[in-house]
Amino acid sequence: MKQDIRKLTAVQLKDWFTKNGEQGFRAKQVHEWLWKKSAVSFEQMTNLSLSTREVLNANFEIRPLTVDQQQKSNDGTIKSSFKLFDGNLVEGVLIPALRNDDLDRMTACVSSQVGCSLTCKFCATGYMDRKRNLDAAEIYDQVVAIDRQAKENYDAPLTNIVYMGMGEPLLNYKNVLESVDRITSPDGLGMSPKRITVSTAGIAKMIRQLGDDEVKFNLALSLHAANDQKRDQIMPINESNTLEALGDALTYFYKKTGTRITFEYILFYNFNDTLQDAQELWKFTKRVPAKVNIIEYNPIAEANFKNTDPQTLDKFAGFLESKGVIVNVRRSRGKDIDAACGQLAGKNA
Image 1 (cartoon, rainbow, N blue to C red):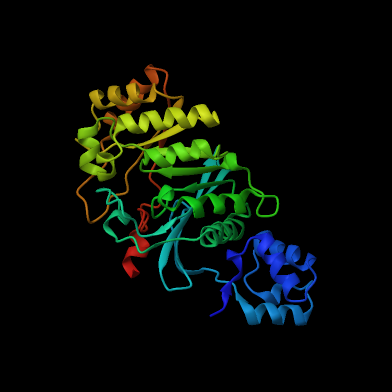
Image 2: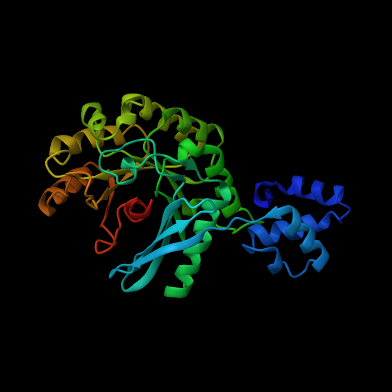
């Protein structure tokens, strides 16, 4: 079986070239084709000789993902299921955002795992089994594909990337960090790490590791309840990663990186939407410099959760703002398509 060339580092690639009688600088050319120009075949590497390309083709393969299905919402959101080399499916979403009728942001939402092991009760992916982690190249390929969609549909490149698709990024730590490096490196796509947000359901040990690694990207915590009893009900991961443990880890992360935390909070009707819930959330946000994104829910067939009503949302957000909390209300996108995380891939998995 041929080796996946994108699993080799630049140093390993150079070693392979020199050991096989090729000039070492060819490795830099190949590395650039793979990560800067996003080549999906050796035939595209036109500054290499035909014989060099044939040698590469005989020893290596590139395993690009392909678009399996694509849905475009009336609001402009484009959701894709991507087929991996082994036939597994993951999802990615292009989310265009307008300001004063002008394009303000082009955000790619990408997946980090095939399925998920965390069983969050409100999430379609949580009802799937976790089949495997994505490697760095498979995450990178989602960004490239969604950037292409942005340019083709809106004549604009991506401005932001969020790791909020299928899977728990911090349970695929090494590959997620390597993918961020490929996306942000001058030898890769050259995006600013400050335009990247990694979202976690809350794994205290790995949040601390992010701090130790002094990562430059943004961190978001999917909170959705600020007391342990309620959070245990909807996010079983909380049983082993309590709010106290998460608060300590986030404080550590902030001391190490100086990066403000984003708390994501879906307001579920008659569950976590009272003023007492808002007060608990406010107290939790005081532990570390933070902002709150209140997220409108995309209902799924597997769960009975539904959005709170607009008046309750306004009261909830208003309370937080009265306490000086920065609050953004993120309206649901792609309501007329399979927009909830895991819905599209789950149809064909």
